[in-house]
Image 1 (cartoon, rainbow, N blue to C red):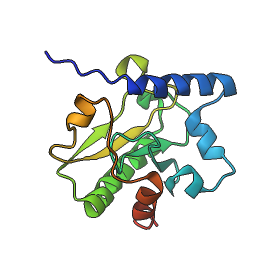
Image 2: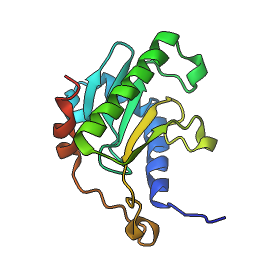
Image 3: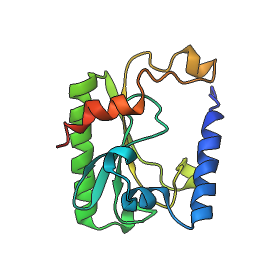
Image 4: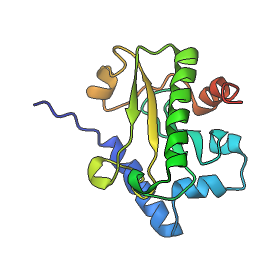
Length: 164
């Protein structure tokens, strides 16, 4: 079995724990209730029970998340209306990403709990990532560096009007 280490993720995970503990809150709840504009928070769409946001620590350009408004750690505790909408928004994200980026495939999923790799374990959320053949190149594997070909503002501008 091969093991690929990703130590750059540790700082992100620890910063979320520290920020949430210091504020007594949750990064997603803070963003949802922040007085800053949706554009400043990279929120692409607000629905009735969930919102779509750019991951500000993306694995790849176009890394989106669907986040429920309700602060819940576990999917099985969520109301059916919320999870139905979450899946509908996930499908919409896939369609938008396919149209804008023409990826070869997608990673779609969620990590529930710290043991499963959740960076924000107290508030479940769905990841949608466009993927291309060869996008995990030597820079990531050997150089421990990700190459993201566009900044978040550019990604936001490309995607925002697709959710209006």
